[in-house]
Image (tube, rainbow, N blue to C red; front, side, top):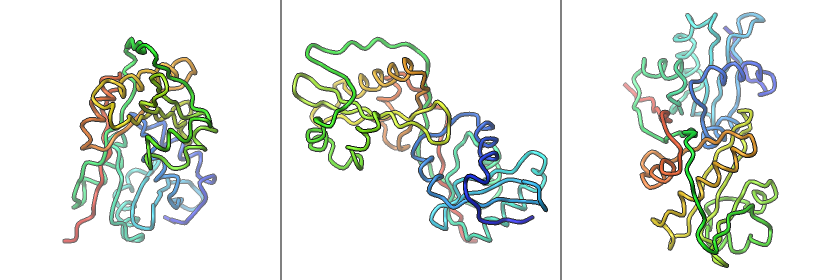
Length: 257
């Protein structure tokens, strides 16, 4: 087998196969790691066997072997880890092959994140008197920065792309909502929110998530989301807003024997 560096465009057909085989999608957190990785094709003579992706020369973010060659998956996996001195791996539990290969080896497993999907359950969410939820405009930028700080980079770019929403009560900004369109999955977008510190535990985050779900539904977009595994407040907010989780992101660390 030949493993060689390649451009993402060269293996796009394999990436589509991989994504189609997942039992559920992953959100923008893992997607950004993948798209920032170095890609390698795996070939047998001139035949495409699969591909892998490595972030920052030490973290495996993808490993895909086509069905016809999966009898070689274990040996290829070990070869790939050794050749690239892999120390860590991000593994979504929706990736049956990769999680199976990972548990074959001696690795520490840390729980990284929850991935959420839309429950498709309709939840009524009436805005309070004087409340407004709308797309953000450049005129909102100063107040967004004051309320949200470094929650995001380049708020102005999010506004320009039409992916940032604001939640006002009269003139006060209570929070923001995000809809980040996926670069890997067609028709999917990661949704998220940030609530003003003084307004937390008052249902504002839940209302934002419901509004984002409704916006996605009206615009033919499937919402997905995620949160850090130990952020119970975010998990509860997403679930109360109609998102459900059955997928985890695991952080595997190769231990030295």
